[in-house]
Amino acid sequence: MQYNYKVPCAKKNLVDIRDFINKALQNHFDSEIDIHSMVLAVDEVCANLMIHSHNCNPNDSLELFVEVQKQEVVFEIRDTGNGFNFKDYREPTIQEIISEKKKGGIGLLLVKRIMDKIEFIQNKNTNICRLKKKFFNQ
Amino acid sequence: MISILTETEEDFFIINISGEIDASSSIHLDNKLGEIIKSAKKILVDCTNLKYISSAGLGVFMSYIQEMEEGDIRMILFGMSSNVKNVFEILGLDQLIKMVETKEEAKSLLNAI
Image (cartoon, rainbow over all chains, first blue to last red):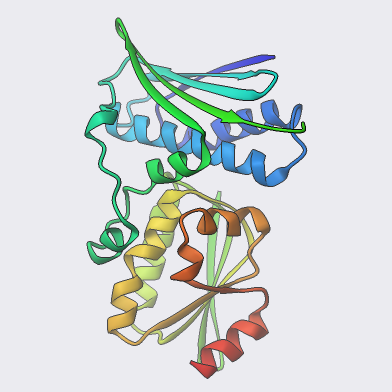
């Protein structure tokens, strides 16, 4: 089953993104905690892209795809901004975040803990962030 | 999307958060918490009506941990739903930020510290 949604890059739209992911997953999962975690992971990626790749420019947009397969869910967030260089991402420790009083930096950490696989792919002008979550007994 | 109300009970400063804290709304929590820790010593955060928190909200709480320790300011969160609590637990923040079920538990814990 596939779902897709296109949304302008404005932070106020994050609530609509969460609503879209939530509705797509409600049809396939029973566990509220699992659904909530996956909604959170997609929200984190979208917030990062809106802020860091698009400077929250509402003329730019993100396109979301959700595909529920037999044993996993695949999320894709596509955009045409400056691609996120995942290789440059260094995972901060919680202690570093506290001592540096940083308010950001843990979004991707959450995504990594929630999802089973994260890929950043550049395909011509399109950047694709692909998240995969395996599931059992659904 | 987010509403933050404050009140005092005895010597406790209570912050009541309703709605969703994300990258768009976390600034309101940041401003409020930044203002409150200038004068309060015992802070209770009522999360009963908090429906959602993302890393932006977690980041706000984390950014004040050190300042609170240095200023001998104590803060406890209470009334979280299991979904919201799980977000703190994913990163192990439940070990750094105290959280309990009820306001009464929060008050007695704060008085005992």
